[in-house]
Image 1: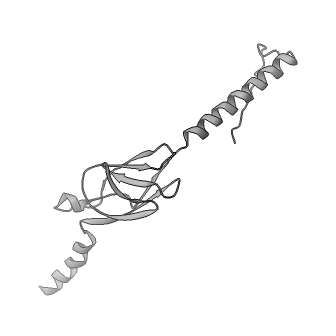
Image 2: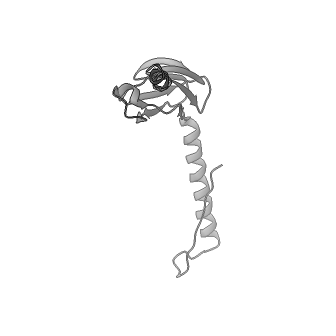
Image 3: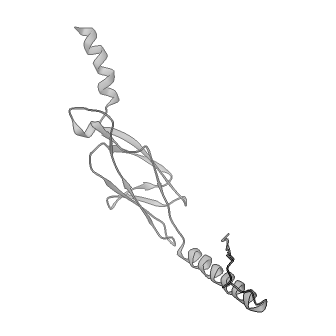
Length: 140
């Protein structure tokens, strides 16, 4: 009888009600919020109680546009207690963006397009022919 309990104990400990979540962002030192409450400053990790509820992760940093990630639980076992039957992904990546940089990229693409149109007009390129004329603009 004791041997049966010894075999069950490791299974119960593996189905603990908490897990460690690691947060990484595209820019270091961004603040991480879970459902609106501050958690830590990335890169960082925190202990999270397992649940069947989706968590909203928000990352914020001054001068950057914040990102939002939904942390969805997934079922890992047929446990009797739902909270330990589910777990979250171990790592969460949150993307921040720089609106000024995005605007600069759009402006550069527009300038490139204007140059192509001027080149077409200068060399009288006929783009209404039966052949295809493709122009690729790469942003770097």
